[in-house]
Structure formats: structure tokens, C-alpha cells
Image 1 (cartoon, rainbow, N blue to C red):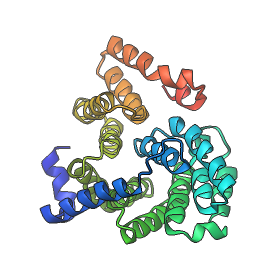
Image 2: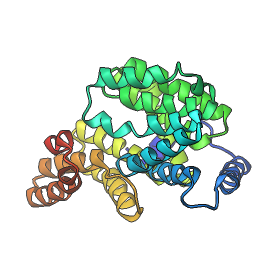
Image 3: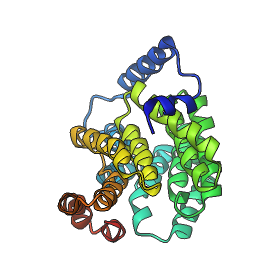
Length: 281
């Protein structure tokens, strides 16, 4: 699928002024929130959020745990809940989906969840937990994430939430909405300099092409995802891209390259004992 074809499915792009406003508000908003004390729970939480934004939730989990303990000691229930829910994301790989979904959903009823930013984080984690278990519920949750993120001017998260709805739309058979949303999320990830989102949606396009047996065409997207991931410090391993490219290379008869890539893809899952990812590779 060419970039020109993708653009046909994208909605009207942001104007230059709108993009500038998003970037400037994000930069200055972050500067105003940064405390100077590196050991403060706010700074620890910020550091964890930076890692999580790159989808590196495993590395962020210990920082969220530290921040949660410090916020609890201070009596800051809202930030403590935000940190607690965030540290649950790695459990998606190892915990029963219904158990984790219930655990996250219950958090929405806590008084601290009335804080919009806390509620936004809970909904985000809930959508992630539901993704591979209940596509219809996950689609609704990501719709709620998109709405609330737009209200809070978190436009990059809103774009990601729309992209996740596109992936779920594809799983539910709504191909038109899937194409529109994922293409737009991919294009905005480039405009808004969001490498983790770009890796995810390039991986999704490449994986879909592998499923359609368009192996050679898929390599362009999968190579893009892997290249960006390799040059972006701290980003999570692009598991979808690795697995799809191994399949594509195998189908093209390039077995030695597929084997080498599979060994590379196994390093982190082996080190972190992520059996599901190991089995997939």
C-alpha cells in the first residue's frame, strides 16, 4: 500500500498553525510541570511517563511504583492512583485478562478518578488491557480516551486513541473506519514527531500486508518501524514488526535473514521472561 493511497483514507490534516500550537503547548506545558528536585515524586512520575510514552512500560513500572509510594506518604490520592494504574500495564502480558480488566475498571469508581488526568490514564490502561480480549469494549474505551484527551488538549494521545480504534475496527470488520483512522494516526505521528506511534502504525500496516501475502510490499513498512525503533533511545521493542518481518522473510525464502531477525527479536523477551512474546517469535 503506497503512501499516496494511505493519504486518500486520511481525514483533513491539521493546519500548520494548529500543529505549531500543539507542539508549543506541549513543550511549555511540560516545562511548567517539571519540578527541579530529581527525587521528588513529581519528577519520578514525569520520568516514568516519558518512558511509558515510548511504550516502554516495563522500564517505567518500577518508577511508577516509587512514585506511588511517595504520593501515598504525602496523602496525594490522585497522583498515587495514576501511578498505581500505570504500573499495571506490564501485567497485561502475564495476568488473566478479565482479572486485570476488572482491577483497572474498579479504579474508575474511586474518588481520585474524578481528576480528569487520572481518569484519562485509567481509561488508557483499560483500553490496553481490553485490546486482545474484548474488541468491542476496547473500541468504546478508546473512543472515550479520544474524547477526553481532546478535551484536555492532549492531541497526540487523542491521535493514538483514534488509531487504536482503527485497529479494533479492522478486527470487528469495519474496514472503512479502520483505513481512515489508522492512516490518519500514522500521518499525524509523522507530523507531531511521535516515534512510538509511528512504529506502531507502520508495524500494523506491514503486518496487514503480510496477512494479505504481499510480503515484498510489507517490508517497506516493517523496515520503517524497525529502523525508527532502533534509532529512538528508550523505545519499546517493536514486537509486531519483528514477528511480521520474520514471517515475510520466511515466505520469501530468505530463511537465514529470518532466523537472524528472530534471534534478535528474542533477546528482550528472554531477558524479561515474557513467555507469550517468546512463543510468538
